[in-house]
Length: 489
Image 1: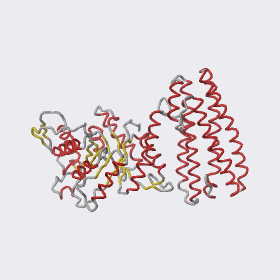
Image 2: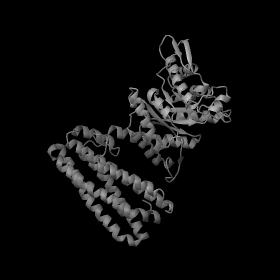
Image 3: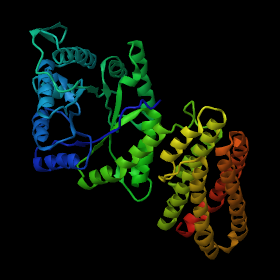
Image 4: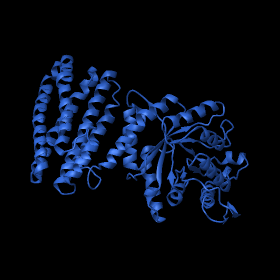
């Protein structure tokens, strides 16, 4: 699925526990202080152990300044849509434009009926939700009077108002085909929850929403995609959102760029986890996504097949090594560090090759390439193609120096039989250093003479052939002894 380009939102999904109201409010105000974008609460009015969601949202609105306030999601069968429209408009006014409306069909049918609500079938609940959306939108509009006569809801001349500060979005909690179809036709957003929707299920659900949107004459990109997530910060990778913060960054950025998810709402009541999410994960995801959006890998949005294959293989290798429980903790850290550096080198090389190709083919001017490279590479202010290589070459050179001076000797002391392998890798380092210098020279020359870009392209290709093969060989030969022997990298 594509990246639909929505601004990224990050937030908190806090349990509205009635037995600890002070903690609930403290977490909500902390989210605001930490700079998160959304505070949300589940809405189950039949739960005696929960605070009422609308009362809680209003209370939190008075104590916060910037976060959006969202029921996640409002139980429509127990909140008549005409009244709900007035409530969300009032909250938007009181909060100065910070209210959105998460909305659900209310599938806990017996619990709804126990509270005096209607006893719908599941199909009826979806049909009632569609009518409810129509009523809410009408009462948030500028019509003079609203008349609606449906099977489940009727409005006979109600006057819209109060008028909200901004156009309030309706985000649907949806999983099944009828609800996904309704989301594509009518909703402003989709907000599933991890546990009910696994990451590998999101593409098919997204596709169902997109198909419904197109059938309704809508642009699928108009529908924001959010995801209620949960996980654990661990020292070592254990699975989806179970690992170090940098792994969270990688996994969430991939959901944003590959599957169009632009909102990540962290569920749970752990203050320390919320702080880490805000301080370590959020800025990392924002940076990765911003870089990818500013500098797409190529003109058609795809890496060259060889680069894509190399990066996919690198991700698969990282996944596999995370399962090696027999390795020592220090060895696990060493392996993960080496793989992270190698992945970074592969990604940076893919960008280098792509930018040179675009300039060579006339798809990008050198001036535009300079702008791209300044924004993307190593967070340093380099303004020319040649300077980009200088930055990249330094990173590769530093990495190889660390290996030659520290990692290789440590491995040899621990296992002398690795001598021939390490000697071969050291020789590769010298060859690659020469190729890096050749690329640097060729790119600098091309700045003053565009006809020399072909020479730069050949130099880049030769560097890529040798460097990528070297990285693969190093991983194949050294990951197992690094992990087994506990070598720090």
